Image 1: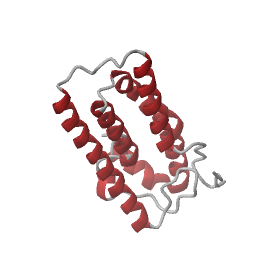
Image 2: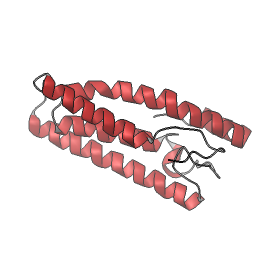
Image 3: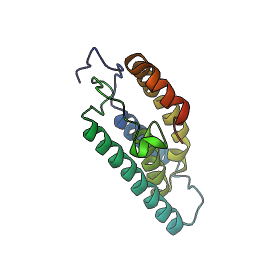
Length: 157
C-alpha cells in the first residue's frame, strides 16, 4: 500500500481492522467456549442481518458519493473534494459507521459475545487512529468549509 504524501497518512486499511478484530473476537469466543449473547437465536439472526445489510447500504451510498465527487475513498490517498451530501448530511463517517454495523450484525448472527464486546475497542481505534487523522487533513486542506461542516454534522450519528 503506497501512502500519498498529500493524504491523511492512514497506515492501514480500516476494513482490515474491522475484519481482523471480528476474527479475533470469534477466535476468543471459541477459546472461551463461545459464550452466547443471550438473545433468541432467530431474533438475533434477523437483527444481525438487518444491521449488516444496513451497514452495506451505508457504505455503498458513501462510496457512490465519493465516486460522483471524483475523490478517493481510501484514507491513504489524496482527497480532491470533501463530500457533504447524501448520507454525509447525517454522519461524517458513514463508511466506518457501516463497518461497525456489519461487525455488530455478524456478532449477532454468530451469537458471539466475545466479538460483540470487541466492537467498542474497534470503534475507538478507528476514531483515534483514522478519523482523527482524516479530520486534521481535511481541516488543513478545506479550511473553514470543512470546519463549518464539522460543526453541523456529527462524527458518528
